[in-house]
Length: 375
Image (cartoon, rainbow, N blue to C red; front, side):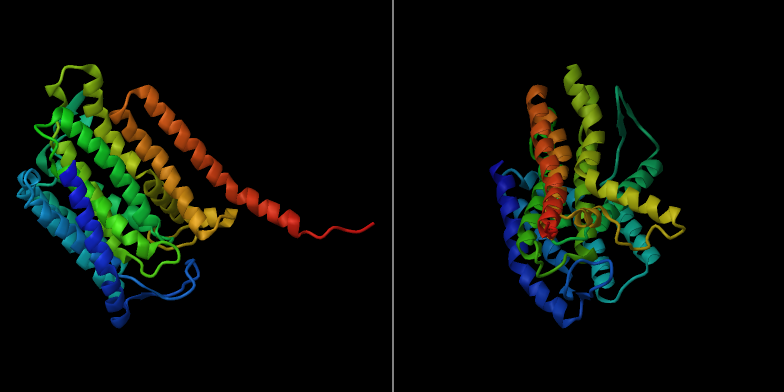
């Protein structure tokens, strides 16, 4: 665990240190997010923050390759594939942030990066289903891998609409997935050192290092270079873990359920907020006769702002709902079920209370501001 924490710290420190430099370069090259009708920021803000996170991630992997135990993982070919895929989507995002790309060109680049990563070894090897593991032809599994990676990248990109939102949500999701991955690897894998856990730990560090610069009021945005990178790393961690587990190798029914069901449930749990936002956006836009890629101001965070939450308040609400599902799901793998239920209920009550606080405060303010009619 100490080596994982050290890797997390390296990613956080490098990302935090480089972000101001990246901000300066973004201003110099004109990579600024202009104020548009659907946006909530008030002044043009530099982007390209994803480049600092990629360097932080790469530095963490380089350090891991020199540590006593993680060096077993650091030389893994899968990590090279993740670095190549992450570098490609980060470069794609930089081009989009500086010069702009049309949606279909960007989608093609995402598919290319995911396909290269899958071809190099980071791909689904089977589909764990309740009570069985389904093995499919390799080309089918490669296509499914690309679909998962591209969907995750776009889900994170869709939710990146408020200061600190995407970095915080992905950071919480990565913490939950690291806890699950570490626990599962400890109990069922040859050792606790795995590509999935290492990528998740480094991803947490990148998010923590970037958040101080990105939380409201943001000094810099991560841009597409960051949103797509975070989505790719989160999906790569999940896919790598699924490929390293064999549910049929254990006899205990509860343990088999952890290995059969949780590899399917955890990716959905850690991405529930961005995936929900993505699905709602696609349905909303196609029903209106528009392209799914057509931007609008009706995302979940826009709805929370309309309900009366402040900028930071809306972000915290979405953090909490992410924690309810992601940390709640992970807790079932980490602690006995009765304690996991308490975690879910406690986080759920906190999230619900915080969600209702904004509208209630807004109504109270309206009543206070309404002048009384004298008799």
